[in-house]
Length: 223
Length: 223
DNA sequence: CTTTTTGCACTGACTGGTCAGTGCAAAAGC
DNA sequence: GCTTTTGCACTGACCAGTCAGTGCAAAAAG
Image (tube, rainbow over all chains, first blue to last red; front, side):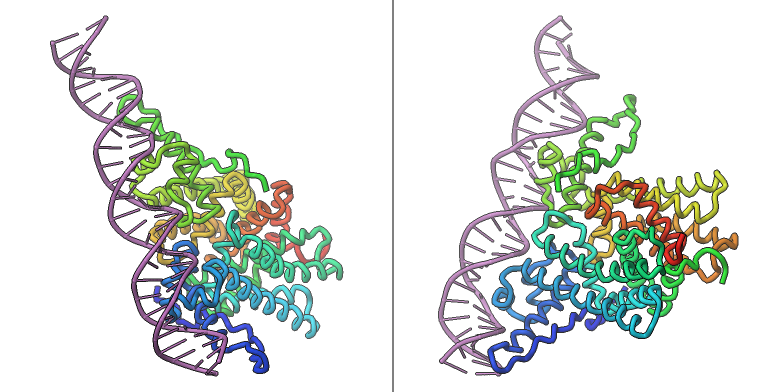
């Protein structure tokens, strides 16, 4: 029940080119980064509406005016946070799938690697994951469309692997690609959030092993 | 994108006895019911903090004062809503497991029946499900403890079936019961919410079939 | 039978507080 | 000497919760 270490919620900078020629100030980028970090934990804990801009500014250690100097509004800050975080996840999933393919692994191996990549991501950015899940199925919110786009990017990576598996004869023709992709994502998401929330002492390998077993249908039957 | 029919979000009345002898006014119960129905959709759409008591009252067709006549506060209303909804889900899951057992089905059959029961529940009360998922992993909120208790009740039903399966030799000894239960719940939850949100035209049977296939490890290999 | 009282459910205007966003002059980087 | 940040006072909308009062039916009184 202790608070997670600050590093647990860091969202890495997007590696903007320093761009010394023009005027892409890195000071500004550092401020935005601090604001992302402050916002992500607060919003994960309390929700968007219950989190005040004053709180975000205070936790980031900047003046309130700075928030508005860097972002047009509270919800723009939030939208950029979403886009940024899901970008990291998507890149990580895609990389896991590609690496497996290069090493000559099967499609199931690729799925397994993506499960692990998902767990690593959630382990590193638990607050972001929390916040994402909480907002994903809300309707009537300003950032709905952003969220939809960004969700589709992530799920598409899983769908691509499933599709390739069906095409290569490794998976059943009957496989329902979008639904199965969603179910797999859900499996990892909920298991990982439960891990974080209710048994944080367990290791990532441990959790990964349990999910692998489920993924590979080794639930029923011994061995 | 049209609004769902009102029945889609109905949380059935708890069948209070009319109790004409003592003073259990049924008028009052009807009002509370209307408030539940109004609150569940609004909070699912917008979140707890972004939903105002005025909105809830207006949608329920009562005055704001009536909300406070019936519930001590906005969050008490919400907590009672949570308790009520998860109660319905738990009962439905348990019933599915028991019915399967009576009919001499295997443990996998029981899990499959519970998957279906979960889908039926989400189909009937999509707004409640949405709201539940969105709030479950938030920390620092007043109703955290209520939510934890209520979550454990539901997951425990799944865990019981897994435990029985391990004891009876049907499932591997290595099975990680709490994690697998969470993963299964997540699989159904996320797949179902995606179904509702992104391909609502599909039938429940269809979705159930896709999840069954995944559950029984019939993903890899033909047939 | 008629009048009065009681208690319950509900009403809606009102209050005190909160919070997103603004404006601006002065300081601090780079 | 630009860009960026600070500090801080201010505004106006919005909102949870309150409270004096209404409507009504059933009981009590006359």
